Length: 273
Image (cartoon, rainbow, N blue to C red; front, side, top):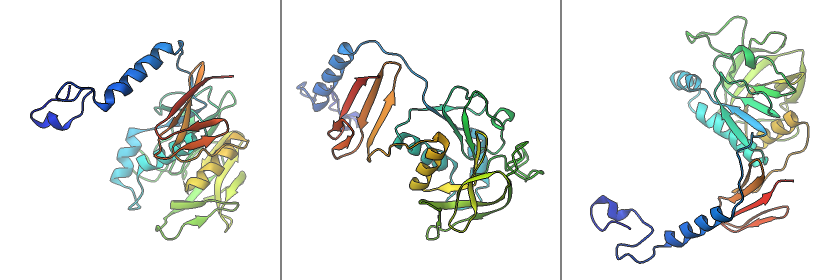
């Protein structure tokens, strides 16, 4: 029941102060019924893993170089891109071995653990930008970053980009905020219109030499996956369990994709095929 006194009187409850049903009552009742009717399910490993590192967050807060370089924002934009592509995402610590994932992205890791300098079991790994770019004393390491054995990419210098001057990527998308001048003899999968390497590949290991916009991130993910990926409409996202796929419309307008049509704040689940 909503309290009729003190600061709590501004907090809604399932019942109004006069004990009549509040709007949340019917919503909670509906959710309880849906949980009762839903068959047993279990958590499933996501198709993608995203590496988040608190040490890197603290390091780039202390020495961002660019006024709008924010580590959390970089990781969050990678997360949004993965979810927009219809992928379920697990967030891992850098000391965890991300084996068994289709795609692993490790953006902005100040120091690359040895197990993230190579791939195994067919996992496609993408590190960067700013991967391996500092020592524990916050100095530039030598050899120059990313310092991955057997990977020819070398970041020679970096550039912060003003908001009004993104670097267009050849084929669509752009680099914003941060760009790294990189020398390499490995495969350049994506480059800027000016021919600067952006996504460099050797086997299943990739280096991302810039901060992509939304369209650029989608191109990066399709390159990593080696196939076309959906681009879900604004607000519509999905998540897989071991037995079901759940669709959520987080937006204020109706959203549709394939056979799924959801009203604002709507949810739909279906048995995974």
